[in-house]
Image (cartoon, rainbow, N blue to C red; front, side):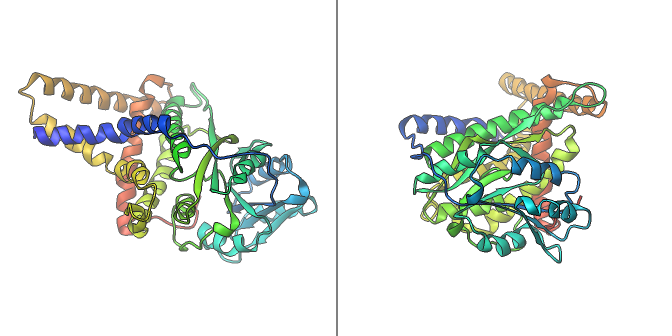
Length: 380
């Protein structure tokens, strides 16, 4: 039991703290920023939308305000067989250069990407979601990295706007997720500086069109598979903090839990299919992939073995102390859940609460992957 406890503790330390420390030390000796500079290639912006009537007009107005030469910019919004007013709203802006691509049947984002990207006019394809707003300079910020011929994809930075607090909202979950997202961006920035980040922000990223490889129609996590295919072809995936997209932070655990379950199921699917990712002879960022993606998926197992093994070692003072610390942590998470259900703000409890929610999402995501329950098409 002491061996199991020690191994579990070491693995959890490496997953959440050791790997970032390794990256920070590595970056001090091998910092390799791209040779960026002014660069204005043709760009095609592509958004795959399904029933986005509530958000699509604001998104179009946001796109029309982009600071990029109009003669080098194509904006395409593809409706994945929307049944609300999405297509009508997009059609209203055809005179402003917004192109509508209609899909007759809902087939999901991967099929839409496969069908549309090869038809686009730009040398670069910028993929966005319909919900988030982007900074006016985001295209220039993304494009300048492609002046470096070794760069094949560039991720923007997603910012989470503060959630409301008080009786009408709860910023506890939002604070915890915000902390997690800052931690995640810190890792991606270090990975990018060394070689390539593992994945991109689906809200805003760009790829060279000729590096896009067709993906399977049932792919759950296209914003991880597409950039990793770029890495496999010998190019870099870099992180650009000045290309900003802004989204609202989750105000409750349910919305974040559902999003995270889908993401985790996609991670399991990808690692089981794309076995080359786990082959150091093929994947040059093998260490980053294993540390950032694979080992993080094992965290719930090691959290459980840490707690169980610790319970068998209580005759020792040190292990009584570690068990007490675990009980305090999980009690804080439970109190955080209760306070969130009562819509009371609790920033001090946000991190343990969000940590437990995200790790439970890993468990549910794994089982959804096993039984194939996670849907490809988007349902509200």
